[in-house]
Image 1 (spheres, rainbow, N blue to C red):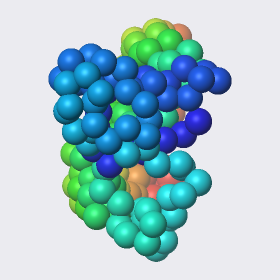
Image 2: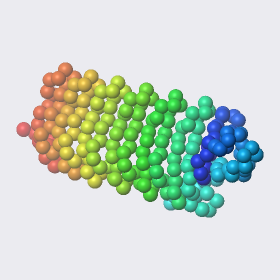
Image 3: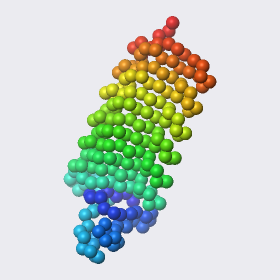
Image 4: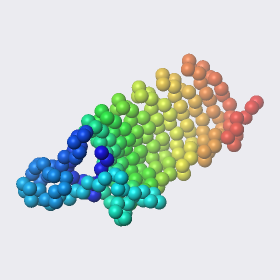
Length: 215
């Protein structure tokens, strides 16, 4: 089952048993349809929404004809949280997280008014960091880094206005450098070197306007 909540409350999903909710004030188990806790009288602030009743129109999320504000949560059958996404007036807003079924985090990214804004991080299932990059109003900006599953750095490059701009370095999984060179607004320029897995140079030359200069 997929469910969205208008205000985050304490609840848990068991495969085949639906949603079980508990009062965050006294811990009493609640009926999904309850408006108040039968034990302490605390008002229930959560509304569980069927995923099929949510509509995406022009990149906005709607519920019953109104722009949706709240947290979207999905679960694996073992009860482990799978996704958590937040919306404000129909727009993706805040931190979105995805997890693997083993409970380790798979991705974390921030949204600002439906655009990526801030740091995006991805992990392998073993917990090792996979990618890290920064966004500014939906555009890649700053240092981008990637790793192999064994923890060895795979690549490093600078982004400016969504394009590679500056030095890029790539490595083999062994740690041996694979290539190094520069970009200018998304175009390869200047001196580039490529190495073989044994460390010997494979190619050493120049790029001009994105084209390899043949000597």
